[in-house]
Image (cartoon, rainbow, N blue to C red; front, side, top):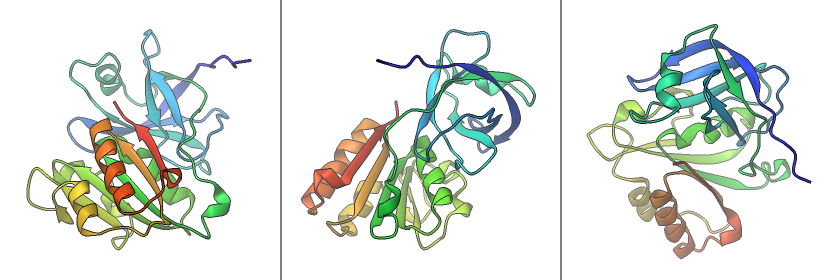
Length: 220
């Protein structure tokens, strides 16, 4: 039997701007349970539309954060952009299978590949499991879109900037992977736009990574 989604009002505790169009909303947790990598549906308090967001922070904290990029013609993000501290949003229960089996953290190496705000679940993974062996590739057009890049270990994080000079690598995440093949037994997690996911998936399979070791989450 399918469980009904439960929507509740959560107060905005803080709003942190990262660029002119991208921001982090910190919300009351209100007892909501989640695993690193899961997502929520969030929307304005008086509207009928919601949008899915991976939780940006870790399950160990007493709040919820989401990373939001405003879409000019969107039904949700322009409204969220106008909200402020002490306003409210509706939030549903956390769902999703883009999670890490905890027993594998000590025995496996991980590759995380993100585009844009698809870095959200990886921000949660890295801070929830600081002991893990990982490499994080973040594909963006401009360096300013390498959100919170300073919080990652520099030896584990690669900003792949395709639209201007700067960053750790000039080009797309696919170009970096072609120049830096991964070990076939690496557990690979990919999150972002579908075209990037398809391309990265193909490259990883050609490098010998089994499909059972590749996990994807599409951001629209």
